Structures are given as structure tokens and as C-alpha cells.
Length: 91
Image (cartoon, rainbow, N blue to C red; front, side):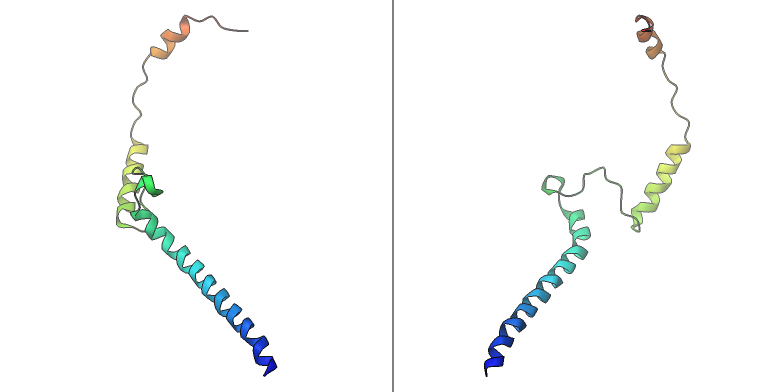
């Protein structure tokens, strides 16, 4: 009879510890999905965040990004040269 009183708190502690560890793993798996649905003001992703890899929009995003990378850059204006010509060089 005396041994059952010592075993009860250990079993209760084991049940509590296993339930807490189970909640931690579930929350880790749900965090990625839930954060996509939260608004930005509540801690969610900003509106200009790229789509996650593996989604349908990700391939379109990468193609558009590659197209913009290969596109010729716009010509630079000579405004930089005129503004710097009024200053003397410092040596």
C-alpha cells in the first residue's frame, strides 16, 4: 500500500510532461499555416512577402523574378554628375 502512494505522483508527473511535450510539437507544425492567415498588424506576414516554396504561386513568382533579373536595367540619368560637379573634391 505504501508503494502505491509513491508511484501515483510519478505517474501524474509523467502524464503532465508528455501532454505538454505533445502540445509543443503540434504548435510547431501549425505555426507555419496559421501565420499565413494572420493579418500583418497581428504579427502575420507582410503583404509583399514572397509565396512559400511548394505552393502554386511560387513557380510563377520565380519566373517573374527571373524575367525581371534578365531585363535590361533602365538608363541612368546624368543628374548625379551635375549635382556632384558643384562640390570640390576633398583630398
